[in-house]
Image (cartoon, rainbow, N blue to C red; front, side, top):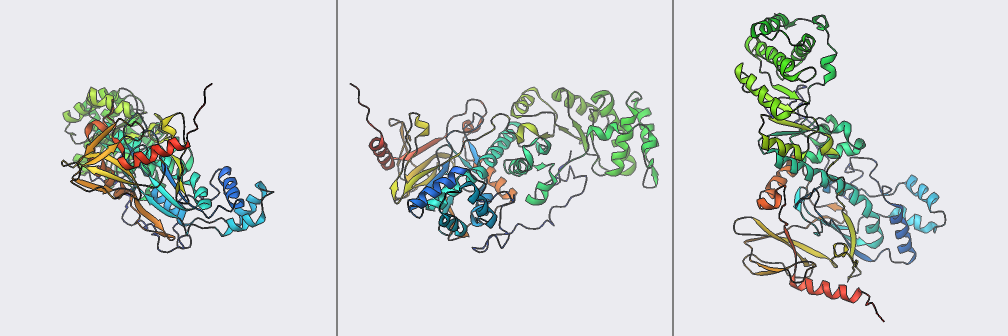
Length: 554
């Protein structure tokens, strides 16, 4: 298994990434005409829940569809029993919002499911766009926490309501995948290569593409998914499967026993005799020779088809030594796909050292997840790179994040949703969000303030209150204050450049570096503080009390 952006592990196919077409950038209100549309053609205004359209119709009937509304997209609990989340999906949100338009066939279909609605509503839908919608958002790859508004949507009530389901769909899974990938990166260590192998196990084509893209944002180095490599300019990697090995029987299956004009197979056989590896599986050796002939500069062999230590590794050593010594080629290494990965990797490394192949790499796959990575680290191993599929792309440990989209203000009046479960009570009103950084450049707290409140300033003492537990308060004197909810879409125009996967991955690395270690550890992590200002706390609690019915007992 090899990685295209590493000189030590070249991609067998020699895929070059620097000549790929650049992504179209939003350059006018007519983004659809200019190609700035969602990657998936299914992402249209009809990719929504029925009740969004029925609510919109009811707003329209009540002549409220043009009232100014503010919605916030957020989640209530970090995934994977952790204390951080990575926000992703912003580019797809901007592509969707900037190209929002019901097609003629969309309107014709809606006529069939809303047969009794006023035809003028459908005429309104046919003309509706997002020219009056404004979005503020966290940056792609931002480290975020529960309750923070990740996207703030402002504009006419009807159109903002129509955006809800699609925005949640575009951000929920992408953020979950990136977070899962980052947790695996932390478990594996910064020095290991991580490759996403989940295409065949993902939930359909779009699940696969989303997983490949955002796994790389979250910290993976590449993917096996060629289409993701093409569309998102990420490194691709791959060698061969067990089927390739088992398809060979004898040396007669080779098109030639030579490499170029020089004998190859005979030298490999002689090397096997010389090293005393005479009991290895010959058909496997033939397969390795065939693959080395195809990819002499990036020979990496899957060694567990028959027996890892008694056949696969010895056969690799024979082929690798001839490649190196006779042909001056640099063999890459092996892949382990079954068995005790810790033990097998350590035994394979000993054999490599014995025969002068110290730099050969060991790649491991086989149902790896975060727990397996942590276990391997504790046991000790010699694995250089991990190929991770099912448990990454399906988010086995937690398959959904649970983002929500709530109305917080309408016609300038704050809106609230109450619940017996305080976690489901909303924080009313339009808010701004600030990250307060301490003198050691570590993030201390994320603070929400009402949009009309003055911004906090570095060096001043700021009272920070728990959103729901009144007695929990603290004072913070930050060295730096960063406003993290930024304008991204207004007047039909996207206001920010589209980040490449690499740009977003670098942002993830930078943001993770400002968190304390106890916030990101796997076992019993410490919660990161998310607070509200003292003024906002008074405002929110007064509103909650004003809207909470008082029960009478007799």
